[in-house]
Image (cartoon, rainbow, N blue to C red; front, top):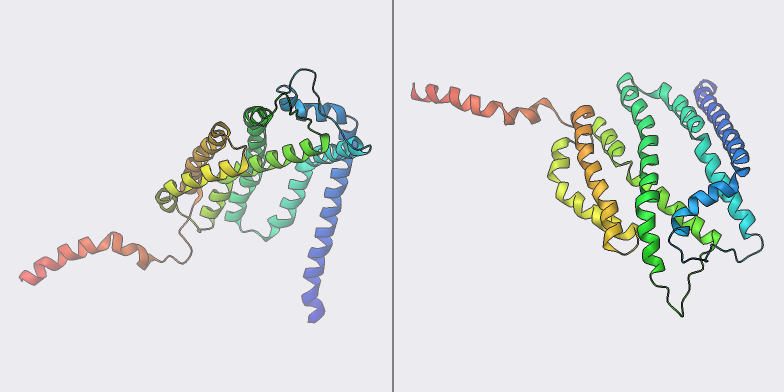
Length: 267
């Protein structure tokens, strides 16, 4: 009996190992391909900063191996992006057999849409927030102060911001999944809308450079995404966990019972 009980678990481990190996191979291939275009990718990534740098200034590297390792990191990030369809497919094929039909119906489009929303968030940060943020930071330069951004520092800063914006735009997917599991309801989301708005502005102030423009540029789309989350909860949500028919009866039945009881008392 013990061997039979361990067999399914070991099979799952073997399957997980196989799918992880496939993911790593896909990332390695993507990184190898991206390394051939490392300069183009890095130039594209640094364009928002280059456009606001004073004329004649450039991004520098202070250590001899810094440029080499920075290009390796850029290639790895690009390889991860190129391999994302394979990674998503392998993850889905691993978890799909353990899902019910309703859960598959919700999770399948959620997985695909999460890629779209994450990409949209990263592009929003790149095209709209980066120019304002970099211009703000460079505003501290003066005759006695000069900005000399390095390759390593810029890659770390930009990649963290792009990741943060991408994850922030996953809000509708996250809330819709919670609603589908019965953890939140549209009524709950509407009731707590004002607290969510305050949180978004605080989140924007922490994440973005300390100026009002970039804070609003992040908070505004998150407010719109929150409203979109309410529609997602209405479309895919279900009864909250622990709710029963008795919990819902008082909202509709008591008035009818009171009307019926009145003639009986008169009689």
